[in-house]
Length: 116
Image 1: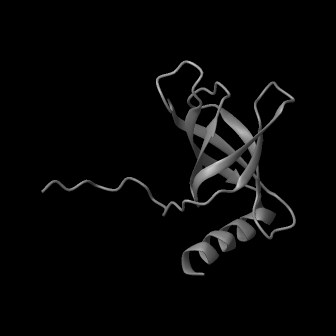
Image 2: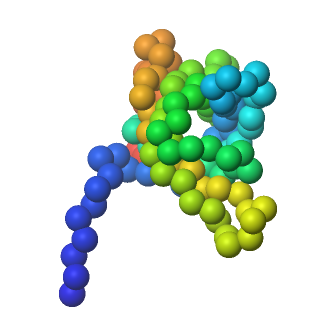
């Protein structure tokens, strides 16, 4: 039997969370829904052509929370969902910073999901 070492530092939750992001050098607001989310990052699908290591601003619209959580993230990895040229990308994002006044709200949301 083969054993694999878990590389993730945080438990990932399969939770759809609405998000907005703005790519550097653009005023276009892109929207998406997370496929999973954790204290260290998130995963979502997009038609946008993103590059590995790209950093950008994110707004997470948590359910039952009035104000969005503001964060910055870095594209850690990306891959096409299918082999078709027009297929969307699956994107893994590592959080670089979550604004201080949003950190507790975000972590409480995750804890409620885990232990709720």
